[in-house]
Amino acid sequence: MRIVIAGGHGQIAMRLERLLAAGGHEPVGIIRKPEHGDDLREAGAEPCLLDLESASVEEVAAVLQGADAAVFAAGAGAGSGAGRKKTVDRDAAVLFADAAERARVRRYVVLSSMGADPRHRGDEVFDEYLRMKGEADAYVKGRETLDWTILRPGMLTNDAGTGLVRLEAATGRGTIPRDDVAAVVAELLDSSATAGLVLDVISGNVPVTVAVKAIAGN
Image (cartoon, rainbow, N blue to C red; front, side, top):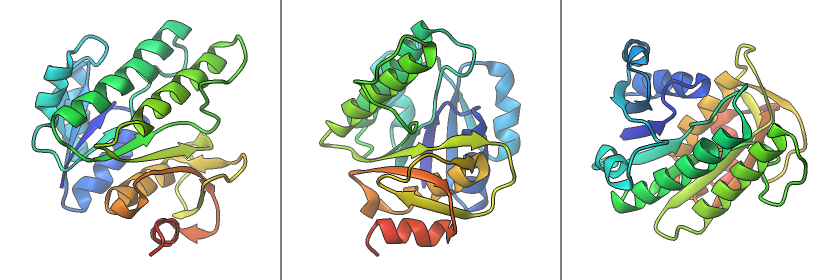
């Protein structure tokens, strides 16, 4: 499959690109800094230079044209202010969903966040982040032409992946290595039966492949 990933230089995206390339897929990572291109090539991905904060839906749709699936893994990142939570975590997510529809890419996986909720209360930047993620998720859920799956990981760590997770509609709080989140996204891309599901994921005791098959009802 040809899979286009928004936020292609992110920590989970880079791990995902390596997994997809190793599996014989063709990952394409959207990046906004040219100097990140070599990192993507080393990971086995094709870099695509495009700033989702300023691009038009037509420009993004052109990148998605002919893709088999799309993954939204972009984020403003730690240290960014509330303004960029709007322009990246919400607005870029909306733009990417619109572009996927225009390019007729049905399979669509969103890397969201546990606790994302448009009605979340609080005045801190992280509260705004959860609201913007929640608004973006709600928008994607309303797209009838997308076979979407929304994945909401618990607290992310850089520990080595174990390949063992807990993947459910609601898991409760917990941690999970970025390695394992990437593995779950890769497996979800191969499982269209998970379309229409919003899933929490934390570390657990079930192998990733088994967990995805179970949640898909296979």
